Length: 224
Image 1 (cartoon, helix red, strand yellow):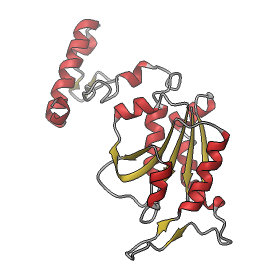
Image 2 (tube, helix red, strand yellow):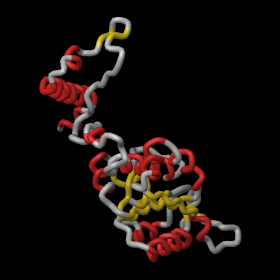
Image 3 (spheres, one colour):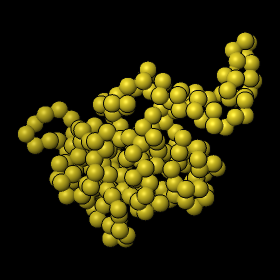
Image 4 (cartoon, helix red, strand yellow):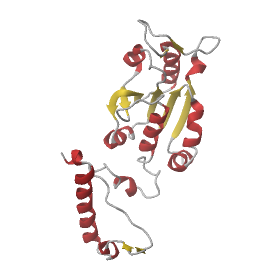
């Protein structure tokens, strides 16, 4: 999979993408990440990419021309299965959407900033608008990192044990059950006996019961 990210702040991605699962995916050749500075596509001598909104109002708006130039150049080089825009008024991101996006071969992600982007960018170039929650960030960069991380871990071969992703919370519509490791007894707080029994069927039944109980207690909306 190839993901191209369009941003005004490319350095924000350096540390995040250089570690852990994303770094492993890139090293294994399973994921290509390309960060594009939108300012490089501005024809203004000062590389200006924003301007005051027509009709007045607070804040600045990202201009259409540099964004369009970047998108059109990339589209001229390859086909993209989706062009995403990170925005608070998009559809809320979830595990099912991550699963679907992981099937793409090439994907582009536009990070907004300031008061947003010129509406014509959304009308002409964006296939899907995504939000990570009902709150506002300073820009779409952090949201884009979340999308990349959630999608990358699902790509076959990225995780050492591919079944790990299949048992994550939300994959089956439920929260994950509690997990334990050594020591079996920590200051009198013991691991449930069933997990030490070696009885695979009963362990799976216990995990399912715990999933349902935890989901009912913490996220009953998922059961609905």
